[in-house]
Image 1 (cartoon, rainbow, N blue to C red):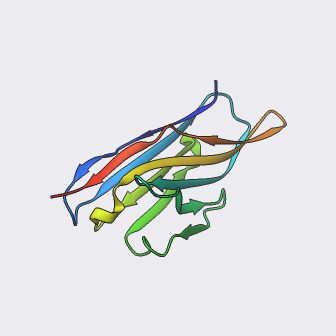
Image 2: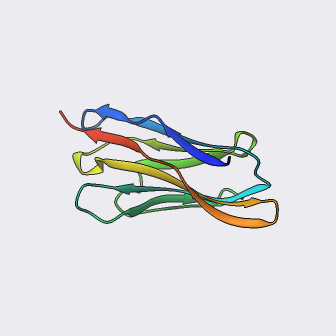
Image 3: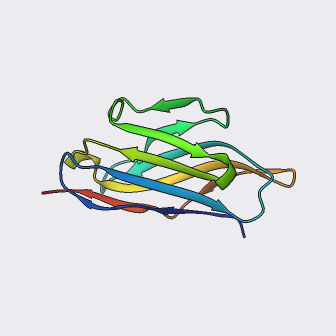
Length: 119
């Protein structure tokens, strides 16, 4: 079974840092774009950052200069380094990937990891 599994969330004080990981497991022919989204209570899901299979990146304005997305293609893993965290960064963070399984293209979602920024 192909799936995405996130890890690295937790409770951190304002100004602190966390590193999220999302690993794809199962038989996958290739992984194209990978992304991190977040959803706070009562708010719509928001695209935080994305990275192409060639390493091109894009960020939401709210996280530019603080968050860095990266990937390790050998490990089928995407990371999100979050620095200078703010209370408004509190949310469930979900990873997303466009994959090819045999000849079928699919978009996979992880189950999410909670990030709470609070003193």
